[in-house]
Image (cartoon, rainbow, N blue to C red):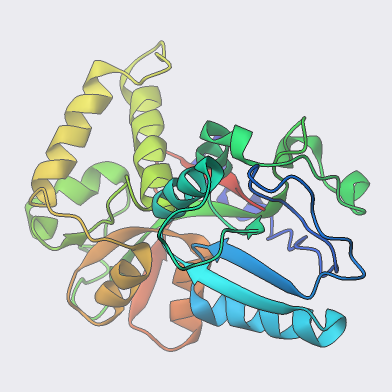
Length: 281
């Protein structure tokens, strides 16, 4: 969903509908039967979210339910690959298979929807239909706009990027941080967002796979990156805050967290438009 710049102030606030409940939300298909709520004392959660976020929720969840939670962190792509291995049966990985996948753009979750069991939340009626899967394979946890962030100590306001196309300016060549979209769900979402936004700008009709002009821009962006990507998004955020990079494409929430913490970070909503996609459970 591409939103025009004029609508940026109407981005939906995070839904925060992750349910503090003593039962299984989702499970890998290799489990034939979920434990009854009365006997379930442990959950394994795969999550691409930063630890400061997961730790807060997990702590309160345990206080309310007494259930111990083990969080396995990684990029969305990596975690989906683990779920695929888990679904095939026992393997040599000592980490237990996931009961819940918490996080990841729903466009990524839809690709592997057969890995998940249907689950209908007790709060289902309060969640708009566009933020949940019709077959209940995932439920929206939050809606996160995609933005550009830059280090305001290294990049002046007059030099600041105002559009996706600004990212290929010489100023940012070799100084633009980007995670590997194969491993990072947020990087994948960013790539699709740019492709879609540039297609809308450059072509009167939009192909499902983007216009030729938009793909040409993606090639330019790859050159600006020096064809180098980082493994996970969290390192990219901190790299911009620390001054290792001038700019990056970022979820709004991560940027606001850095700004609130006092980092030299500024936030831009690109003028071509951006996306606001659900982050799913």
